[in-house]
Image: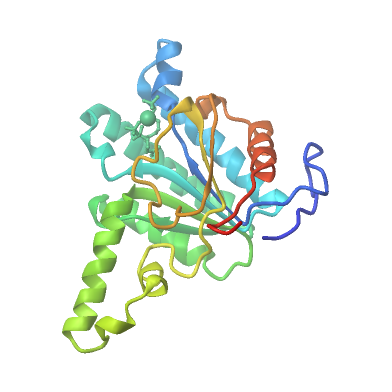
Length: 247
Ligand code: IPE
Ligand code: IPE
Ligand code: MG
């Protein structure tokens, strides 16, 4: 963990320790729209704007890794109309992101199974990844068609294949090898996971990686989430006593 160097924001003091890796379960778009008698898609659009503000802010204050949960492997269960609106939003975002982040330092990565998306979306994802991979700033993992159980199944299959092909012995399977076979290979585990919208559950997000993550549940719906709320979550994180099983 790095010590926080204040860059742009006044609320966080110099003594605050920044989490190296933050995860955010961007939840509550539908309820936000319902409260306003708007279609759920309006909530997703509003949530998309907040995502851009918060990812930019995290990069500005010096967060090294940010993982945002945008679409889960279970979200395909939703009505077709909502799925279509989400895919349109992803496409618009990815097209703009290419322009937005042109002169930026952010490394964009997608975690999850890309194969379920349209060819157009897949191409945009790859273009964003390729275009940003040599940068040196914050790593932004966008979890799309991501499910942690699916991720673990993939890791098990890949390791099993290596064992079957005599590339690996059973004895060499350890925690690091499993971590190295996840989408987040090479990245530190999240220090802090924030869930807005007041739900007390993990919803298939980073199950392996979150073994010792601090959770902060906030009562705001994601489209109402502000940079002050992010500061607040970091402050709460700073008051936690992380023991990792020690004393
Ligand atoms: C999160 O908001 C966005 C996605 C899952 C794509 P929701 O759509 O789950 O919003 P609520 O939880 O119904 O309010
Ligand atoms: C988790 O939210 C997934 C995302 C935010 C992308 P959900 O709204 O899908 O989770 P549940 O159904 O409330 O557990
Ligand atoms: Mg939800």
